Length: 474
Image (cartoon, helix red, strand yellow):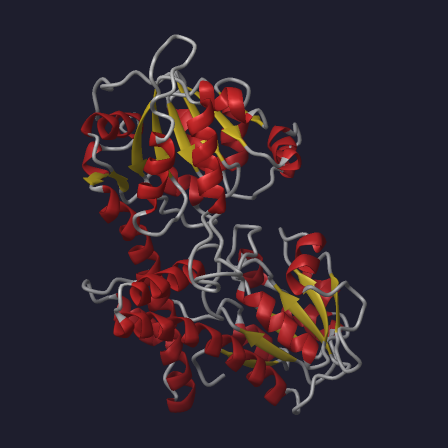
């Protein structure tokens, strides 16, 4: 493991208390008790949730996060809205703010909106003192560091109260977290990537991670390689999901079983078994956004074939969601009007309450447009969040022919009087459903549409439940 750090770090500030900033800083605080770590955010409500004594009210759900918060909060981990003093006291400032896709102007629908990155850089330029290491943690387009450098260097002639010039080193340190296992990914990562052109700053940040991560896992690159590696990693993972989903449709037509095909493919050492589970498509905060940004960059640099290639990965993802809705309508006699469907799962994956770009959003919206009345159950997603995502208040019609939705508190409340069950998230409890009880609560004929291949289909069939799942002839 690493030795002494070349630059003494006593205080770290992270701008952004979201899915990346909160867990990452918590794990750093846990493993570096000698460093004071402060997470700042303009959203007072979010900060209040991070500071709530009731750990079930943390703004995000990640297995193990509550224990880390309990151990470190108010010891050397703090959450505050006081951005000025947090930056001015920090030796290292992490930028971990949202970088959504632009909705207007040049690059709308493709390019990343860097307004929060720029705003954060300006705050650092204004409030920092002495020498500060600034670390890009957000997922950003390649060469964003150039913009950050320009903003920071505009203030490098300003002296602080000790008559010292402000100076900055900019590093790229992208996150490679899988939601639902972020804490374990932070404690034992596949790699830590640090890009920059200041060796002393790079070694300083590496020294922090070396407190608990073997130095062999820490990869040091230039800034641009680090920034692009994050986009490339997400693009490759998204491509694997779209690729296996194309084979799921072939399996249904030919009599093959996608689970068996995935197992056979995954045993090839050159391919590996990860991200080969067929399902309703990829979601989350990064995959779609990063693919769109990659497409924009490729077109910007006049690489249309590259852009078209990654565009197809996105198209396959949307096609899979449309295909699921078509299968549900087809098996329920061509119409969903006034039919109740139970929806199991709304988050984009299990063990998280994150719904950003969840496949469940579009699938549920389309089912409602077809006239279905949905009873949605998810163990972690709130009614407020589902309302926001569906853009339909519960119990109201979107249009004359449109259906409705309501939130259920359990699997069995959701299925009462339903004609169909749609499994959209792979929560563990969906593996252990009492299908005999389900059969008693539902209408007949009842259909199970398992888009995650997670349910006990043999037990469902034994209880006279019709089954359709992705990638097989059930």
